[in-house]
Structures are given as C-alpha cells and as structure tokens.
Image (cartoon, rainbow, N blue to C red; front, side):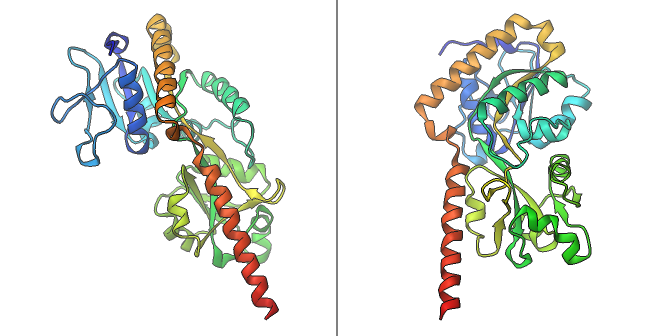
Length: 312
C-alpha cells in the first residue's frame, strides 16, 4: 500500500464515530492514509470490533490533529473549536441541519440522486465548505414515524391534526431545523421538540418522530406499533425529508492554503471509494429502498386482513 500520510500533515481532521466509522477508516486506509489507534498504536483498518474502537486516532510522525466524534457534534467543533478544523468526514444530513442549509431538502420526495448531489455541492460552497468527495457508503433516508394508535397515515392527516385534536402536532427530532423547514414547506402547522431518544418511546409522547434509516431494521421490529407517514401528494410513498451519505469536506480557507494536497487527497479518496465499491458493493446499496418496499408489502397485507375481518 502506497502511503500518502503527507496529505494530512499539519491538518486538524475530524472523523465520525458510530455507523460511519467503518467505511471512513476503510477508505482512508485504501487511500494510503493509515491511521493508528490511540489504544495500542495498531493500524486502523475499519474492521475493529466495537470494544476495540479507539477513542482517538493519529498518524505516526505527524503533527496532524485528529478528532473522532459523533457526526451530530461535528458542526459545533467546526464552528467553535479552539483548533480550527481543516478537514471533516461527516454526514450530509448533519451539515444540512446544523448549518441550516435549506435548498437540498427533497420536499418529501425521492428525487434524482444526481441533482441532489449537485445542489448539495453548491450549498456547501455557500457556507464555506469545499466538497472533496462524496463517499457514498451507507446511504440513508430521513422519514417520519408515528404511533399507529394516533391514526396519522399521511401528510394530509398531519395537516388536519390541529382541527381534529385542538392543538398543533409536535414533532420530536434530533434534526430540528430540517423538520421545521419541512413542516413549513408543506403548510403543516406544527412545532418541533429538539430531543433525542428511542423512536418507539418518543412516539408515545409525540405525534411525529423523525427517523434516519439506513436499512429500516430497527423499525421492522416495531411495525405492530409504529407506522411511516406517507406523502399523499406523491403516489402515497413514504415521506423522505432528505437523504444522506458521508462526505469529505474541507474549509474554504484550508483548501486555498493546501490546494494541491487537497486535490490529490480528493482524487485518492474517490479512487479508494470506487475500489471499495467493487470489493463490497453492499456497503453502498440504498437499503432503505428495499425497506420501503418491504413496508409497503406489510401494509397491503394488513389492509387485506382488515378487509377479510370486515367481511366476516
């Protein structure tokens, strides 16, 4: 493996913990930028078991600074850190919400990926970030959940919630800005509670809960109690507030200072991403699309069963 650790020399790099960790480290490793664990100095490959994941990482013989953080915390370190951040690998959804980007939302529809990527790149530049590479692994979609007991099935039901219940619906979301913007776009009178917690427990107390799903596996286990809200203006498909993939971005200032290195890094990251795609295509599948189809099948079966009971 050719080593390209010089590409990050002297930079402050923020990388994701959690679900985006594996793909990020695998791409960095393939790009020739092997990071080492702060636990035992071993080279990180992205295949570390959960109990061996490092609290931090570093490159040997380098004055680079690395921070491993939840993507939800990336924007705060980007804007408030005493050590200015130069390079960031994070999810588009976190950037959209924390920076209050509005344009790339899908307005509840599953729009063309190419146009979404183009808009996203433009919006990043508007807030002072240069996209080096869309890493594209583990694509996810942000949708809307509700408890089946509430009888909310579509955006139309949500729009009529105030009239039927005498109060505005409150949506619980870790992505408060995106949720508020979505409600505004659809002329849905509602409020947003910026809280986190398990989807099922939040659905007990709030009419609407946002869910970020890669595979839908956590929802599948709870379909007896939870339902996806559908867009009755778009073929009755499940609502998609926005989609997201991980991306590598540089601040405009860091990019200008290190343009040649950044351009080479962008090339190496994209090359490594494409190699990983060939090796492990499942890492890049839009699994939430399969979940939506599975969900539709479940709902059709429920309707059929309900119809059979009515005819008895």
